[in-house]
Image (tube, rainbow, N blue to C red; front, side, top):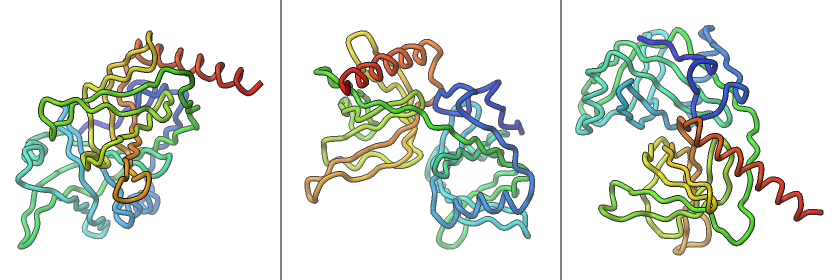
Length: 255
């Protein structure tokens, strides 16, 4: 099983450069358990991934260092669950506020109970924490309204147009002005087009971090906070140029 790589060799997520994260390898059992208990107690989403791109959003049901086991929610009807059991490398990734937590899963097996199924895995001997530093987030200015276009698997042959509320080089906040319950934490959205201005058009993958309702019922909209995943060097350069330009315009408007 491979070990999570440090930011100096592989991006720890969101296309963020190595200078924007602090990596910390956790090996003390008391510290590992403190992190894992937060996922259990808060029902915090986790994503299980394999090197060939299989992704399965789940939650940690139980952590038991005495028995040396972790228990994750699993739906045996999901094709991704079956593919997870066939993979020799599975990694778990989750977020506790500004901290990214990542660890390998060893001996992952699908077990069936009377009322539910679950993934069991060995209790990890080490966990990686990536402390994200503050990323400057800008709100668009001017007449041009940046937006994101994506095709959702639950809406065949239709693109969804989401307004960009703010954006940084690690994440973006989107506003869905329709009453559609399509997004959930841990969901990966591939092939998203982000149009920031006439000269800045990015093709990205997003990971949904949180979804909240905005407005009064029954006409509530959805605010969707997303992480930018594995941004290409060219896209990162274009985004940084847009952020610098927008930041300068904000300063001029406050003079």
